View 1 (cartoon, helix red, strand yellow):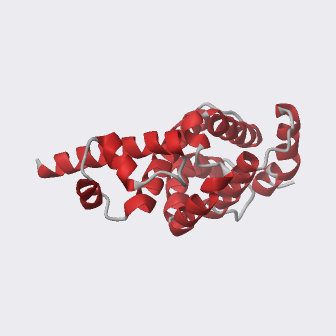
View 2: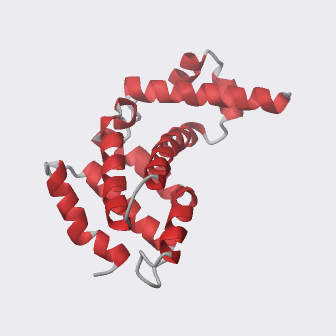
Length: 194
């Protein structure tokens, strides 16, 4: 029973952190703010989240990443040929992340130093999580010869993660069709071959 209570308290704290990051921004949110929003003492927060604010930043980011990956996995299950699946998957993820007000607080310049340090420390965990979501689709496409020979899921996921991140952060003002053409010209050939 104690474990369920601990998990429940942790989820309550993560919910409060997500709320505070959206309200105050990552740079200005304190553990005291999170404790107050959760209706808990600061000591309880520190007992439940031993990594402090950085652990909470990561927990909120991983929660949002899970939401994005759930959407991506659903899209890949109903997608057609690999080139279009890659393009539409990237387009959907970028559009979804940009449209989520609760995710925007991770993308503002004043949050960059905080989120960058957290993401750098958890990069392998994040990439592993992404790989596990897309591995079934990727392996099926490889068996069907739709992906160039010798390409590995881990390297492909890292490449796509970097592309998606840059498209989210660096908005060049392209319309959706121009972005699709960019992906078709420069990203798809890396995965499926010329």
